[in-house]
Image 1: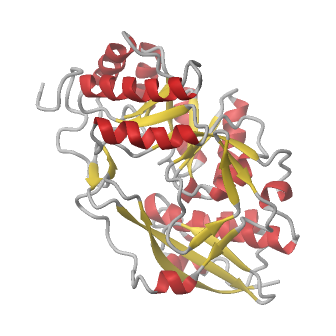
Image 2: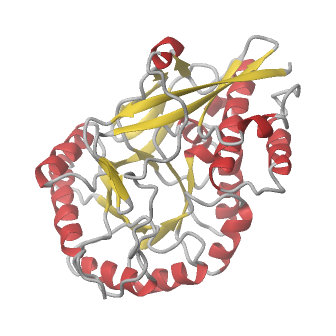
Length: 386
């Protein structure tokens, strides 16, 4: 079997409400999702969801090769991107191609990827994550009420701007999940998306912990700040989670050596091979791993095959336009199907009708870091500039 070429598509996720975080908001509730289809000479096509940046040059590393040599081809792609660097969206492109290759390999074996990777259980525990910073209180309660109806009993809220707003919103969601769970205490997480300084992070979380029991706080400081993450980890009761924006084991190593994180995360767009390697590294440090991202299908399959998977992020309950996935959401978990490979079906006609092409990040969205991010000391309202 040989890789013969690739095709690209761009679809959308229709959230039907504003979505975003402390770095910005998509008011129209529409986000784009790039897709890469990798073709072979035996008629098997693999699907990867992720970046198209530098796709042509990265694809040159695998063109004409046997896609079943997926881990070797992953390292080959890294070597091809070595000189200019493989961080950011280039790493996402490598991850999308890597995911497509795993899809091909499992399809060729006529097995769902979770079973092909050695997983013993198709059920993957989940938590709700609504990208909800733009919702008012009533909208927030309604959104997490829908998650609760599907059995979700843990939730991660976006926040980090106003400590009292975070307290109020976390309390509202806690009450929704507690009622749905018959009084059982839910898991509550807060994601600051790297917007705090070290001291502000400790002050903010400690203030919340006066009245709330937080399971973890996510990305409290910059992703590479190993010392800062360790300061936060020692200064709060909640666990510290980070890693979704790291690109390579060399970036995880200093964080783990500093004792800066309790929950090791990887992003769906970074690929399956990356996840498996990060999971092994985390396991060597007796730490759990938790996948991040919307439609994290590849990592859900891989999560079944590692001993230290904790829980996976569930964002939207509906798939993107033109994509169907062989999985269900039942009793607060993803339930993977038996379709060979990833179990993804791409309806090219529906996506082509959208007429979309990959473009630069929307400057109104979460890709722009606020001017004062990391420059505050106190856990106060947004207008304070101290």
